[in-house]
Image 1 (cartoon, rainbow, N blue to C red):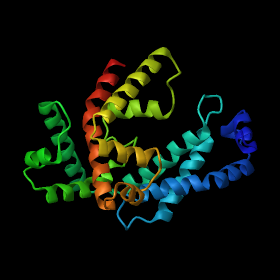
Image 2: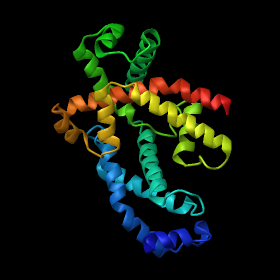
Image 3: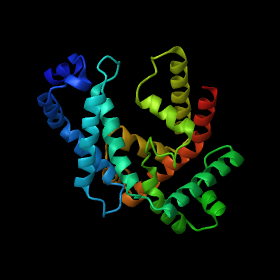
Length: 260
């Protein structure tokens, strides 16, 4: 453990007695993380969104993490900081109404079509089946995916995009509360299993894009080079994967919350 991390862990009453010098040190140490998260979010946003504005919001999220982090809980500060940084950036974007209502409606249209076809077919729908369901050709379908791609940035606090069970369960997962009591541990395990099952049901290319993006930290351009496809096509596949998962998991999360 670094000396800085040790100082943070040893603070007794960090909300009222945290040394401003220590806070400044933490902000400097984690500044690259703020920039990394902001850049990753910016890669899927319209060009008119300024990266510097996202970074400023991320710094606010980092400061919030410093104030609210509980060293006595069994989770890492870096994990908690990532959650707060990303949440602060997405909250600011939401407040600016950066996703037009028409785009949200397009995303919901795709989600509903995926859910309907999966219910009828017992499997994930292909692009051809989606085109038939939506009464459009592949070019029109891909254009629809491009317009809906920004909605794949999931905000934990965005109640217009997430159901009650969705939000509460995801908050629980990200806050790492699985060990707080036996019921929470069971709920956490059920959610993990459902997510794993849903990811496994995706087509191989969709699983690969998610893995490269979220686990290998490659950007869309780098993934395109790996798969020998255009960056635009990678963006389409990523959007499809997220919307498929959203449609598949929505009812699962609600059912888990209803049990709770």
